[in-house]
Length: 175
Image (cartoon, rainbow, N blue to C red; front, side):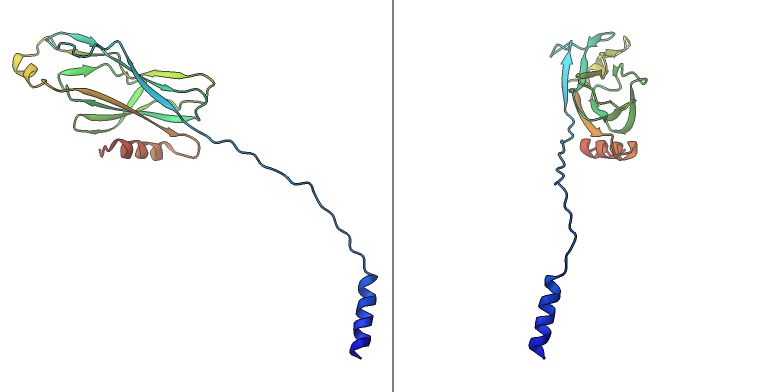
C-alpha cells in the first residue's frame, strides 16, 4: 500500500506545472546630507584700545558653505564688555533665544536654504562705548573679551523649538 501511494504521489507531482515570474533587482542609491559652516572675522584689530566714545570695528561673519542642507543658524556671543561695550546686532537678522550671564545665543531669523554657493551672514559690525564711560568703569573691563561661536542645525524633520533646544545645549546656555 505504501509503495502504491508513493508511486501515485510521484506520478501526480510530475504532471503538475507551476507558473512563476521574476523581476529585475532594484538598487536604491542615497546621498548623505551635511551642513558645513565657518566663522571668520573682518575688520578687527587685536589689542584695540577702549576709551570713552570709541567705536571699534569688529565684524564676525558666519558662512554656511555651499550645498549645506537647509538649516537653522545660531551664534553664541559672550560679551564680557557688557554693559559698557554695546554690539550693533540687528534684531531684523538675529533674535535672542537665551541669555546666561554675559552669554547670549542668537538664531538667524530665516531658515538658511540649500544653495550651490556659500552664504555669509554678518553677526554685527562694531562694538561701541558711551562717551560718559568713567575711568572706574573702564578699569572693570581690563582683560575682558568678546567671544563668538557658531552652530547650525538641520531644518528638515526638525522644528524651530527642537533646533533652539539643541543650540542652547550645544553652547551650554540654560536661560
